[in-house]
Length: 245
Image (cartoon, rainbow, N blue to C red):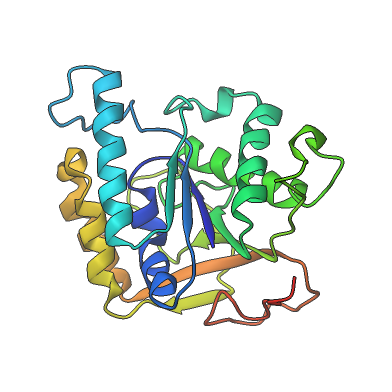
């Protein structure tokens, strides 16, 4: 399973329960974070962007350890400016990672940008969606294909979704939930992983209040699937996965 996010802490806040749940089930997991979060409002004691990026990479690694992530990758795109990046180049890097890790399932944000509607979240979802589609095509980035890298079709793509909005924000239209995952007591791991991001300590009470209000559920929208299927409510992101593909 591969998760594509924009900032350190997204992996915990939006996907943490499912990451820990599936890791405990023996699933190899990969989180790709597009930026090191160097433009964050909350900066801990960092004196400049470079220092904050270094600290947040360490926090991301600590969070991934709590969530039992197999592989965590932090790329170097500028925080807050993903909408200004060259789309074809950004998708190229993600496509290579998909072809190398070869996930069966991908998780990311929808185009609305999640509950915060952050533009970086929106762009992470757009980049990931194109990488999901293009990684399986031999005529996309053919220079990547060789002895050790071949096209790969991920079988399912999900967008994170929810049933609540934050007060005082611009309007957000979420994709409907087609999968509701009961993360059980991994809620505590999810909260602990978010709190591994010490620079973001001012957000801890807000985050914990929101996730405890939502309960032990994470919600997703099935955006694409290799096998033809109807959008019936799922309780397992690996429903319908063909182990032979």
